[in-house]
Length: 471
Ligand code: BES
Ligand code: ZN
Ligand code: ZN
Image (cartoon, rainbow, N blue to C red; front, side, top):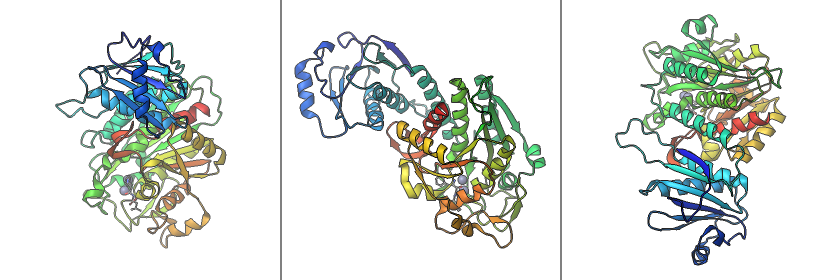
């Protein structure tokens, strides 16, 4: 999308006009907008937090966005998405945005909603999606000092969503590792790709077990962003689940549960994108991302329930269910992270259906150990960017649910507290302040969600970048 900051004069602009009207600021005559029009629109105004009023004109609509004073960032995101949907259906796909009293933060949210809603995964479609041609932001009424940084984040969002939407037939572990390497090079980030042999010599029993049923090799990608001057002595480490496809393995998923499992690497895509975004912004922060990559398939030599495997940290794990594979590859990555003596490790993973069932598609399930302050900050950032977190407990009692008779620990508990026992399993492999983000409910949407669209959402990326920025 072409985004321009310029003077937008409603009388002269060759496209649709959006006016973000806040509070009692309804005298729009100076903008050349007729009093009668405003009056008519005000009459149609509803009690909603935000109301998008459309006045249809000959291919140059007027959208008046009324704020009731209680509008949130999310309301503005939704308004932006609504205008995007409306405009792309028209022959003229240029849109100019003007503020009449709306706060800078809300103008930013509106533009963000509009831009992110314009994303479509259409590379395999003969008939491409329609996009906004030009987004003109009025330079007089809207001052967005961080627009440049936002624009590069929106591009990272697009890259992240493209990776997650890409089917495994074209994006297996070796191919994704190559893509990350190329992206790292472009971003000026160090990238080390550990191949099958190295994963074997590191004795990463979790990654190797999950990979046994696959015809493709596994990879462990390590990205490192370390600017000359950084404010943290000990790095922040990001770990992301990179299951390129989750069939469930020998405990194979039934049909409707297998659909969308190309998105089981959303954690890895999100963490890589967060690190790249930090590099784009030249944050003075030392950040490392560790991304274990493989698919989970029931191939010839696939690992089986009852297998006992030895992990990177030396503990043994009884496999109860091969579909609880994410925690096995993450455990090795978390154990590998210990060598960096991290100040904080955050992981993101589409880990459990239980997390999705618990809070639905409206937020992230968070669990943490020894990271109270960081978790609090993360939760604040979540409120600001409207990617909210719900914290679940990590009580010792849950350890009983993953005790094994034949090994040190087993890879899943009962049907109860599924997302917590998964986190308790992971905790076993950490010795540092640790935050676990279960993004299973939000990484991929089967119905269109305003701004996040349909398919890969990129949910969590804005949250993480905000957190790193404020760290
Ligand atoms: N990748 C799935 C979790 C998932 C489910 C992500 C739905 C996104 C949407 C994970 O590997 C899995 O299969 N988890 C099992 C664990 C169970 C076997 C203990 C689950 O949640 O059912
Ligand atoms: Zn699984
Ligand atoms: Zn999985």
